[in-house]
Length: 258
Image (spheres, rainbow, N blue to C red):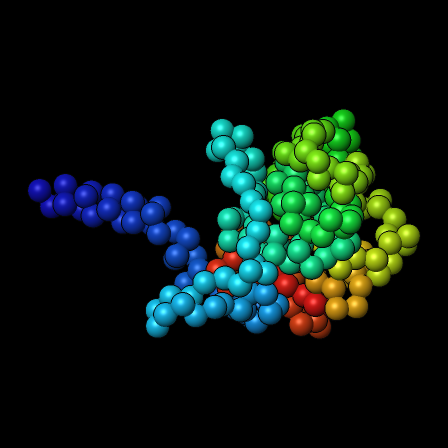
């Protein structure tokens, strides 16, 4: 009887761990980047008070959006809240650069919500270029594998839509990308390409040269404790020691304003 009770206790502990592993990880693993509320990064996110306990968005934060069927099985998509933040910031950005097109979901949202004459450049790889993705000795294995899995698209969610004329897709390894012709050209840069340390470092260093004064850089997937985000967390926490970098509360987005 005692043996059966011990077995039941062990099973319950295992189930509890599996159900609560994210919360447990966050308890033991503390992030080193300061959190900031979305309303503190741009005036468009300030809320309108409707009543004592109800606040709503300003007109500036109303966006065009869509949902994607889970049957697509797209890896690493932004959450609806993250997508809303990126879409809102796009409304005030005439020039946008994106490291990592993947399915084109975020690219599509930026195109739908940015000004009529805005221009968006998104960098990705063709499937036959996947062999160009080399793994350095200190790069995370899972992040390297995910970079390959996300480089399978040659048509995107925005393909054939009228806003496609805003978008230029560059099929190129970001490690070889020449940023010199784009110095201080962009209002908004979204970094969501390969999540290995060497790629995040490369993309960030190039983005810092490409962003305009008062421009905004966003990084996706800052999640301390998540294995596939290990390299992003490590690099951004190093970066934050010398730069004012913030993690937007309730998201995996990190925010930097030049």
